[in-house]
Image 1 (cartoon, rainbow, N blue to C red):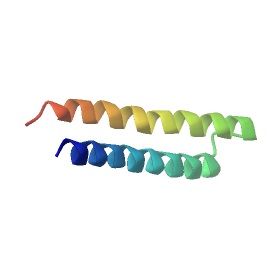
Image 2 (image 1 turned 90 degrees about the vertical axis):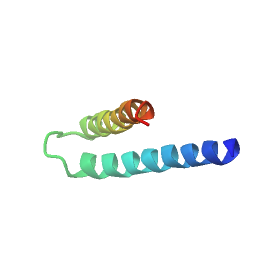
Image 3 (image 1 turned 135 degrees about the horizontal axis):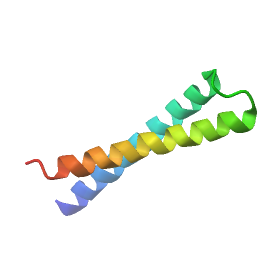
Image 4 (image 1 turned 30 degrees about the horizontal axis):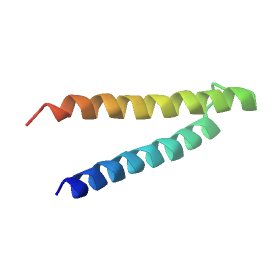
Length: 66
């Protein structure tokens, strides 16, 4: 049972990370805020960090809800 739960948690984290990576890449590619490639890369990294960070904070908060 414990192994299945860890596997499920790992899969959820991987799916969340994959979604964050793909979404951040698309948003960085289509944004009008960044003019240079370096700015687009930094924007993509910030967006990725925000997606993963917010996801982890929300999951941590939901952990305490029965």
